[in-house]
Length: 246
Image (cartoon, rainbow, N blue to C red; front, side, top):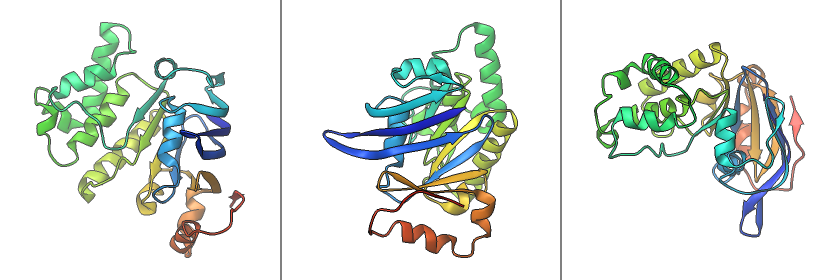
């Protein structure tokens, strides 16, 4: 579904992404792990064309979209849930969701997407007329995910979706992500917390200083007693490492 080959990019004259290559199969949920400053959010920005890519290839469902603009990527089926939610606080829940359907055609399709999202997140169904800025707890994150789903994407990118959430809300969102995967949606999850990310994905990449340094199944990572030591060792400054598979 998603294939990235030798992607580079950064800010100003500085490159952050160092020839990143990864793939996510159709219907798969994969995790991109790494400490702060590893380049994970930069990769999300490059994928969605909000940060110019300096090199490399981006394919979605077999289509070469390396030169595509952000709106073309949305039309092709890519949706991003950004770090920090970025919902429109003065707008109602319903209005925020409607904005997510900008690339969706037809009133019947719009009604179907509303129904799908509100069944996925019943809390939102109780608050459709409420202003988003007055929502509490993890509800804004549910709204951000719901808004991304309104365009009926084939690939959902989530950047730190569990940041600052209470354990009960984390469980609700994990349950929703599992339901989305059962429905055939492809997911790439950016996360720092290993214990959360590895419970709702089947494969993981670890990024350090703009490079992918490890790829493994989450089942294998969960069985490693030294998992946390490995993770923090990768985050410790040192000589460059080559990507490995486990």
